[in-house]
Image (cartoon, rainbow over all chains, first blue to last red; front, side, top):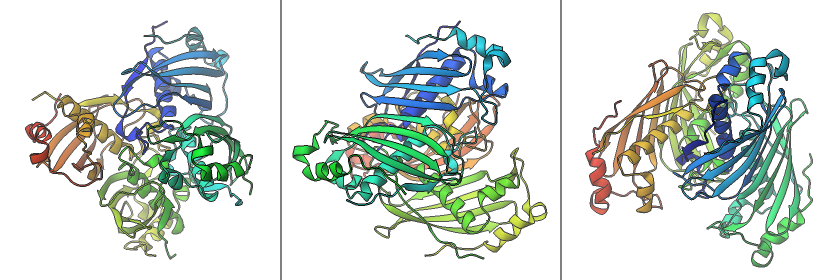
Length: 144
Length: 144
Length: 144
Length: 144
């Protein structure tokens, strides 16, 4: 197993809205960035999953906004895989403002594995490589 | 009170992703469109709220993906104001594919009122016009 | 030939940025909406083009910003097909603020036809239906 | 003067569209990221410009699409300030696919300085710090 590092970047200008803060929809994209980065660090990248003919559509997503991020701010996303049964994977996220240390957002997403026609797939028997790698990270929580 | 109609439009090309379906983050934007349309139909438009010096940041949002929408599809959003206490407003949404009649998504959002510095505001005493109009629509459910 | 009407809608909240105006990247999306609407009105919709196994990737795009649009404003896009030779189609656009009548933006886009592997396709011989319909609209300018 | 490095990152999943490539509108956002990064490296960050009460709205933007980027690809943006007269700044960009070395896009943007009410401002007399720093980088071309 690899040590997984938090996902970090700065807020882009185009992510802000007329309130002067990051538009709330953009956090859903930020969580996706963090999720994809986690999987890449775990050596089970989206590209690899796709090359096996699989996709990972989202079943649900949830965001709880604590403190808005603003243009130029550095943030970090700490992810935790809270569930993985071969078919469904749940992840919880904390987005932290690195400039102030404040918690900006907590979120959750649930995703499954499907074939290219969006038909659900269980990885346990058919894609053991995926199943084995991700099972290892079940319960894993990203820390600094 | 006005009869409120569902919010309808077609999916844009740029809302799709490489899975060939609407990217999951875009539903959060669609719910915002529906929310703003609801308030306009209720004669308490965002523009009016902003002209009183208030904003409505989001406290939380939730999406449960049932059946993906695709490019060019006509959809309708049915909103219901499930809570309004003068400070916080909760809305539930159903997004329906008008071409097939299928439920595409259920969602929830919670938002509050703040001044231009994002300080929470109770509308009951200070903005009775907002309070009175939105109280009328508490529990209101959009239907065809 | 059909009379083609301007493409109209309101600016969404999420299209604004911290300057309080529509983020400049969003006009590229608005021009796409107008282009797709034009083709649908001309009875040669994107969906139809895609069902023949073709795509229309963009070769170039240009925006000249005259007067920013803001949240909630009604706008109209007037398109003109300035070139169509079966392989490449050029369109010019004027985006007008319907509330003030002011010109907000002029733009241009150039797009071609390709197969699903992004290989360029000439429609004249292989897709005469596309070629004939779009040739009719060559030089056509949308008016009210 | 500082040596300015190219702006680099990976393509996000949500930047793709149903053609399986980056949606053409997203390059306008990528150019903005590169522009803001250039200014930060030049020690005249957007945040600093904004703290002086100025904004930098876009006058025009142009993209010429050469070879589409796809999900997960590493790219680099090479910027060159081709004009700066204190009021208007023009930048040209080359976006390169770092995995293949191929040129993906060439672009241009023109922007000006305004006050918070979008009134044009000449920096030469009123904001000499901005004028002096950016004048130094006039003609500067980012290289590896």
